[in-house]
Length: 65
Image (cartoon, rainbow, N blue to C red; front, side, top):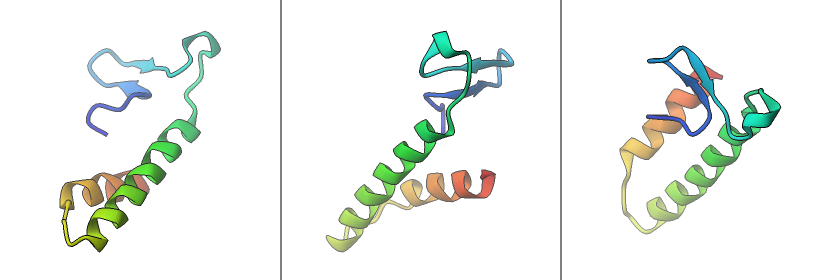
């Protein structure tokens, strides 16, 4: 989540939106991204390639939820 594509810009204190015209933050955007990241992590793990930073991003997101 560094930086997120959608969420809140901590420097500006303003939302960063995937669909600016809607003027809302969609949790689904985050969920879809992290679902794809976990699929990639599992695929890599099965091939004995470790990416602890990927798992860390998902853990931070899950803790936030």
